[in-house]
Length: 261
Ligand SMILES: C[S@@+](CC[C@H](N)C(=O)[O-])C[C@H]1O[C@@H](n2cnc3c(N)ncnc32)[C@H](O)[C@@H]1O
Image (cartoon, helix red, strand yellow):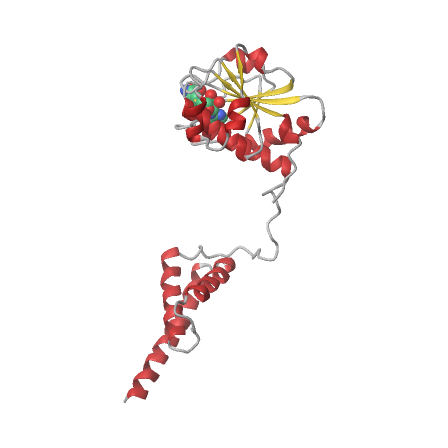
């Protein structure tokens, strides 16, 4: 799969005083996964390329091109728009958005040719300072359960860069496939355990015939599973299928018994 990456070159990830090489490595990895190569570190406590590469293998190109900056001003060089990420929306005066909305804005600005767009991430123990947040146009808060809202730094980078990638490339944002859409059912979806019982039953019933010709039934069963998964059976439909195959098994067993007598 090839994707257009020109807008992604305009995205800058800034880590504010990162404290840990593993988190820097996870950031590098997430960025490289999604085509972002401009990473800038403001006063990192550590930044050992070898240790960083443990969590970001085959990414030495990005690791070696990371810029080390003494100040946020230096890190924001060439940027025309900045977004601060924080779990705690402390600044009522800022626009607060979530990663998807932020990515739409970031890619819009990045595509305009005006300059680069910076995403700021805070240090592991203290987040971003108020002064750093004040330099930004808007705040991104990743929605979480309210009493446990702080994500790991690398994971926060991952979620945001995934959205930037999707918006910039259009990958993974297709409309649902209408061919497989079905009206919503009044019954709950079929239980996975019940589905497994049903597949085992179907396999047994087919086994009474001469349909299976190969030593393993895997290929056929995988195809049947795929068809029935796509159908998205509800509980009533599943139990009807089960009932039909159950009756078939009973009948086939009876016939087999009669034949052997
Ligand atoms: C471990 S968190 C910092 C937690 C810090 N104790 C605080 O209160 O901000 C490290 C960074 O990940 C990002 N982050 C973590 N959770 C987030 C969330 N729910 N929404 C947006 N960014 C988040 C922010 O950039 C944050 O500064």
